[in-house]
Image (cartoon, rainbow, N blue to C red; front, side, top):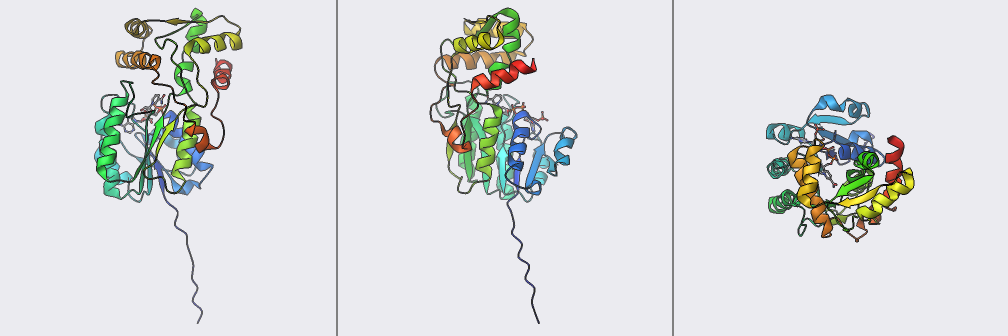
Length: 297
Ligand SMILES: NC(=O)c1ccc[n+]([C@@H]2O[C@H](COP(=O)([O-])OP(=O)(O)OC[C@H]3O[C@@H](n4cnc5c(N)ncnc54)[C@H](OP(=O)(O)O)[C@@H]3O)[C@@H](O)[C@H]2O)c1
């Protein structure tokens, strides 16, 4: 009698929180270039926003950081989990703690967390909740890897339209150098880490290969657009007031002005070049991201 042995390789299930966010969507795209869709789980606060992700063949599950019962259900059967930090400032440490507890209960074998560049020493006000999350991860016993993401180029490029309208790029960063990279670069790095072996215990300081000051960015905007834009440095409180006056919510204005003031002291600068090493190509230069921004205006 012949025994038919069917060998079936079991692949790890890789899940992404915040999958309907800007970074989350890019991570899903980058992951699908590396693994089949049935190996990917999109964890979302609102599944109605994720119909396009379901169409890709990805399993979409509801997971709200503020509702731990949804996390327990959503995390069943997961091997690796990317925790994309929440955008709900002030609630993030508690929310992330809930995700870490649920990951531990589900037996997740690797939790990757999107922290902030040089989180342990960073002067950025927003780094505090990342430090608390890193400490919670350390205390949890869950195997983890830190993706300490630097600034997104998109953050400053969001001001290009108003800079062109007023012939001025405003900020409080003085001549601080900014090593930003595109969201897609950070997403590609997350996909590499999630699909590579032996990542537990690693800490990646991720930033762009090149750095620039806001004066240099203003000069680049002028050069590429043909409209003269000058950098105008403002005291932190004045910059914050301008951001509120153009309609930004007070906590966001506070965060942006605080981040600029810290940038003046080097908080957005990193020269480790770990991001390009991880993704196997140079990071996207600010000049290229700016061209894309101008083309979309
Ligand atoms: N490095 C940087 O320069 C930089 C800049 C800005 C932000 N960040 C951080 O990086 C994260 C990702 O960036 P991003 O550009 O993708 O931000 P984003 O587009 O605002 O995405 C944030 C994601 O968090 C999800 N979320 C918020 N509250 C949640 C909750 N209670 N339960 C489950 N999910 C929740 C959102 O869900 P919905 O889709 O349902 O809204 C969204 O998918 C941000 O959240 C923030 O922590 C970094």
